[in-house]
Length: 248
Length: 248
DNA sequence: ACAAAAGTGTTGTTTCTACACCCATGA
DNA sequence: TCATGGGTGTAGAAACAACACTTTTGT
Image 1: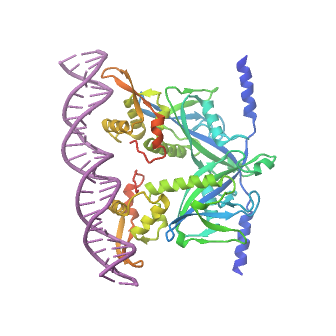
Image 2: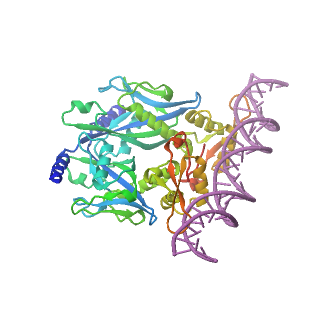
Image 3: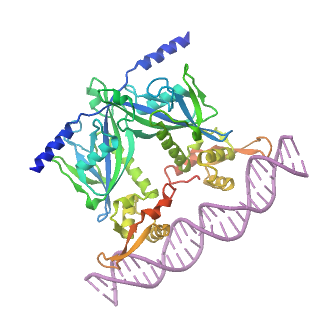
């Protein structure tokens, strides 16, 4: 009776106990240093085992009564002070044995990481150095080996950031209220790489869309003709919401 | 000493205990009934509380030693038999009180749902009806009120499916090995809606990309000129991988 | 012969792209 | 007046959208 045997096997599997989880939230927090044209990610030096003294993404475990997003905002607030930011959920990494604590723990508690991705304004972000801990903006191109699977999470976040820039107005969440078109262009080039579009075409496309309005105010940066300051007009952008708009 | 008071407050919050989680995986499984031009989603009738006798997404709790993706494949395999499928993680829903079991449980166990999104081939999918449970393909346009926050998860999955179709070759994961260009077009129209492109332009664009190769074999469906069967050439597609290609 | 399904072509328009060029300012 | 950064324009190529049209089949 092979059917019965199979049934028995299935039952054994069904009786495999459920895993108990602790849920962590890890943030990939990006900012763009427009002065030096570098994309930065916020890393913290771990103060406890596992991975003591390794750099890693700022993270925390979720507390009772706290939503995932709340937890994400909490870490962020513990590490930096910012006024404007963009934040969204990234991915959930949850294979067994991604955290070495699982092995030593005989109760089989699993650690699962829900990662969030954030973009903040570099100029206004003030790092909060708590006690002896290390905290630093690292150029994305030069991050060292990180704790856990954080390199993987970072890579995933970087990909998402690039995509977001191309088809959504995240850039404006992180630029000052008014900015020059060159500021915007710099932001795009440092995130996307040099060769995504030339400035004049980028400029023409953006202006044609009609949600950037010229304030008329001019600003001079060293030599050269002064640039106009523009403002992102959220109202004029509304019709493009959710449409397959492309910024590149 | 306001600093000290604030410190005390912060400590109270820090002592807030961590939440204990059970992690569920819920699958949004889509298929396309090309004969009737309908987009379908797989629903199951819940056999236990909470939400007894409500329709819901097929889901399960994650077991010890099981990865999230493993759990997603397990549910899928319990409900349907398929050869080809596309599966990817969707989103993690984890606010407190999304599951009524949390309230009654004094230990404060939280239920978190990692949702996965799948696309399977309707014609080859065989539903596995276990015991008395209900299981059914529901037209997406006519899903009733579902258990938990499953309507929300479904909506999220539907949005993702539409996006995926536009810029990635998921369609071919779910079409037969060889298919007519009309099969492909039908699939797109039933998922994306009638007015995304007319057939001749769709056809021209796809063929120009060059990763659909004509097998030369003709197939006749009722009256009318027989159609060529095409095959998706994964190798020829490779260069487009990860590029902002658009199919629409 | 006719309707139905498949496949091809055409045409006017819009959008890319790669430039060249003009403008305003500091040194 | 020259170098520098800001801003405009344009011509050729490519892509798009809306159709009309031809081909091949079943009935």
